[in-house]
Structures are given as C-alpha cells and as structure tokens.
Length: 303
Image (tube, rainbow, N blue to C red):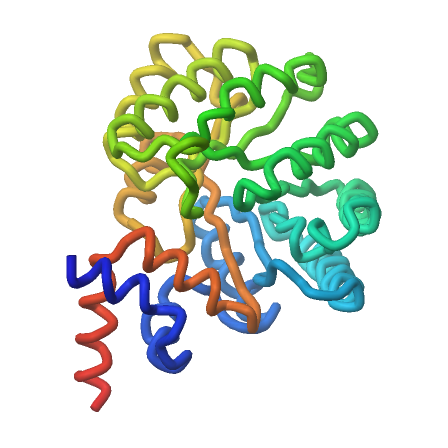
C-alpha cells in the first residue's frame, strides 16, 4: 500500500531521483545510445523496436521536430542494418490537436520506412485516442499493407470487437500485425477490465482469436503465466513461427527474455530513448509499485 501511494506521487518527485530508476529501462537520451544498445541486442539474437520518447504535444511545431528526428532515426538504423523496426505514439504527432495533420506526419514516416524496407508500429495510448488511432491505422494499412501495425490493449472491454472490426484488411499476403499488451493507462471500470486474472483471461481470448484467424501476433508481456499459456496455445493450434513473436520492454525480466529466445521463439525488445523519458518512467513505476523500494534504496546508497 505504501509503495502504491508513493508510486502515485511520483510525477511530483525530482527528475534526478526518478532517473535512478529510469536509466535501467531507457537505453539513453540520444540516438547513439539507442543504436549501441540495439546492436548489442541484435548480437544476442534479439530484434528491436525503437521508440523516440515523447507524447501529447501542445503545438504542431513540436510534431514537425519529432518527424524530422524519426526520419533520421529510421534512415540511421536501416543504414546500419540494425535488425528491428520502429514504434510511434500518434499523440507525439498531433493526434489530439489536428487528426489529419497527425495522419500526414505518420504517413510520411511510413513512406520513409517503406523506402527503407522497414516497418512502423503504432503504439496505443489512453482511451481518448483509441478510436482515432485505429482509424489512422486502417488508412495506413490499406496504402502500405506490409509496413504498418498497431498495439492493442487487452484490458479494454472493446478490444476483441476492435480486432474483429479490422478483419476485412487482414490480407492473406499481408496479415494484420498486432502488438497485444495488457494495458498500462488508468481507465474507468466501465471501459476497462480491472481484475488481474480477468485481464489475463481476455488477453488469452484476444490472442487465440488472432492466431486462429492468421493475424500476426506480437505477444507483449512479462507475465510468465501468460507466456506459458501462449506456449500451450501455439502448440495446440500448430502455429508457424513466422506468424508470431514475443516482445518485452528494454531492461525488464532479462532472464525470462533469454529463456523465451532460447526455446527458439522470435523475441523483440522495445528500446526507448530520448530526453522526454519522465512520463514513460513514471508509468512504468505505477504499473509496478514494488520498484519504488529500489528507487529509495538507490537514493540512500547514492548518499
């Protein structure tokens, strides 16, 4: 309970204190940091998806700056032949300011990724963004069938219907590409499941639907229960290894990550970087309040 109270107060803590925790889960503040860490992960046989941190901008001039940074990111990583792709948050490109401007910005990124033979995954944000982001994804998927995917959140009550609703663009030669995660944003019980096992059950329901309908499933979780259930499902349904992958966050459960990869499953690591690390880090802490103790311990040790 104490950890949870502290976790809720984290946005008001000094950034230097939060960085004690964050530096384990963020590859660094600069593109060179992300590049170096991604190459290390590739050398371990792992793929990456790289995320430039930033979200919920307040003016479209910021979106233009982020777009230029992402274009540089895509071109730099593909020229270095890094094994991976790229994740983007639409709110970074003006989703809640001007939907069409946001679409045009992300369209430009997907176009660059297409020319570089790469791929863009649209991150899912809180519930005010869900429908708009799905519509944005649909438009991009029709034009770039093999170059774009989207994250979805199992704790949202609407998720299975959203997956079904996109079935018409699940092309045989370009299947829908979903990153399935539990969900991290704080949502009302009317639109999101709250029970721990309840969320797990719906995660598995969503995953089964994807696999049974030949959608490419990115199984994004650190929950060993879900991973073990996914193993069983993959075997029961006789799913080819080219139709799924596991995904984990940079710095989280590395032993479990290694175990999954060691069994011959494709593993991709979500590698965030950038100077806008504070919001990302505090969400991670709210998701896992037990980590608060490690921050406090590190604070006293540093003194």
